[in-house]
Length: 457
Ligand SMILES: Cc1cc2nc3c(=O)[nH]c(=O)nc-3n(C[C@H](O)[C@H](O)[C@H](O)COP(=O)(O)OP(=O)(O)OC[C@H]3O[C@@H](n4cnc5c(N)ncnc54)[C@H](O)[C@@H]3O)c2cc1C
Image (cartoon, rainbow, N blue to C red; front, side):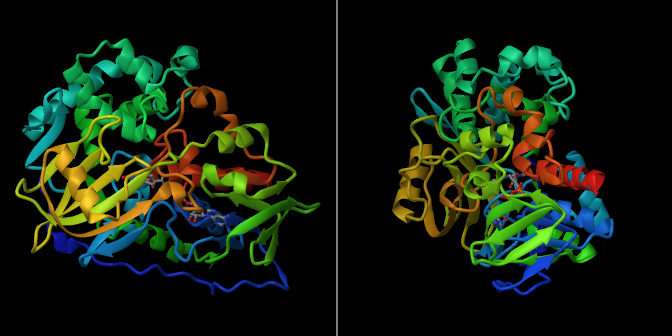
């Protein structure tokens, strides 16, 4: 994990600026050159790029805020992120945007100690030892990934090697390796949480691609949970909107999309309708199935949304607490721990802010007693002052958290799942080529969707 932090005062609360009133217009149909459904990173990137080519663009967003699965808010007066957070300068699409808008990164604090499960219960390790042991297992799990992900940003470049490999779950791979009980416990908290609760649900090729994108090594992998934007994730989104000022309508969940002779007719739940010759669908893949498309979505998109890509159990919580163990990282075991991963964020006058992830559907992340007990199970103690949690799986406008492909989805869905149908394009961090499941992937996908549309008009 990362190097020392700079001042916590670098964080300020950012209020999103939006350029249109949020009320519905039930009786009139408004026309644009392009409509983008969804104001997350993918949608706002697509809208910005289409505006740069002079198109009149409308963004329809279901929530009362922009950002989607990124959400900058506050806890105990500090800026926090309820969804996507960490980015790095080696992520090419993020890096280009940070440079374009002059946004700096700040490093999170290093933990002072780590807790990992062992056969005799949770044990304390120095960060170097704990992350080193985890990294040793990862190096073995991802052996061969330099070959099968020779070009990590072109995931199917070695489709020949991936044909059988993509069928493997992370559980299959862990079993193949015949790990000792101690080795298994060091790693399965991570493989299961990324997979949405069970290592049997997540594809080996998903985590292996992230490993490859991180430079095929443990230091690179640990860098992926280190840096965040000083402006908060909403700061970059506001900069993109400010540059080109598309029209944004919040509180406008889209219920229907119909193809017409001249383009697309889009209707919101409130009955407002809008027309445009081109359309970008930038809602999460898991949400596609809640919109009535006529004609129906193509086969790959239909399969993707019914299978789901965003993990259905993904919950993130922020904990403001004091702990005798100070600034610690803790990891749980698969099937045993309500909290799978806990990372220190920044100090406060009373203690620290911590970030935790859970995929346990019976765990109540808003209940201080349950959270304190879950932390105890990891080997540490906390006096909790406050918690803020977001269950992304039960959020109707995401229906899942971070993207994590299931076995077979890379070779079964790609590249068709990304393909436009005429002037209907698909943008989502869930189906990126490179950093799928990350902000970088959402930007990549939004930029590609804008290009797809521009080629057709
Ligand atoms: C807990 C968590 C932690 C994560 N951590 C990281 C991280 O540290 N680093 C990183 O890079 N990535 C991280 N990610 C992933 C990252 O947040 C996503 O990949 C990225 O934000 C996805 O962007 P998107 O635009 O594709 O989708 P979304 O952000 O989901 O945007 C889709 C938008 O569509 C809207 N919408 C949905 N339905 C409708 C409808 N019917 N009509 C109109 N609008 C609709 C939604 O409200 C939303 O605003 C994390 C995600 C989660 C959930």
